Image 1 (cartoon, rainbow, N blue to C red):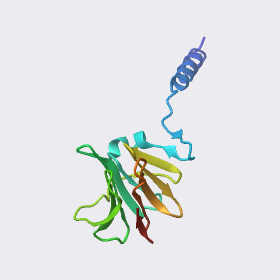
Image 2 (tube, rainbow, N blue to C red; image 1 turned 90 degrees about the vertical axis):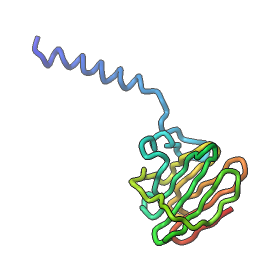
Image 3 (cartoon, rainbow, N blue to C red; image 1 turned 45 degrees about the vertical axis):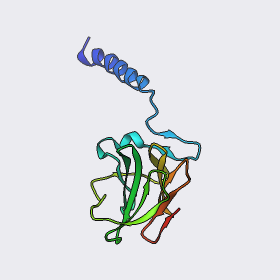
Length: 146
């Protein structure tokens, strides 16, 4: 019996066992057709950007408040923010969420508590609080708060 004859069944068994063991749904598709990739942000600590690279955002929790904030290319020191249960608002910023961010693909979303952010190729990034309905939509062309 040669080495190849011995290793092929062993490696096959390891690969099959490894694939069968991974039953988690890391990228679960939601009812609205978007894919939840919140856990994929891991080391990016809530920082993400649109695939176009024109919107940079952060979503997370600071001292018990869920917050989302986005900046856009050419926006200078302006941003849009959703802070807790308050309506979305346009703000002046002195720091930035531009970073080595996770690229959130079109049709995917990330969440922090009741705040959920999605990316759409035509409208940009939308972050919305599921309980209040407050939020914002941000793109290079326009920013809308609600």
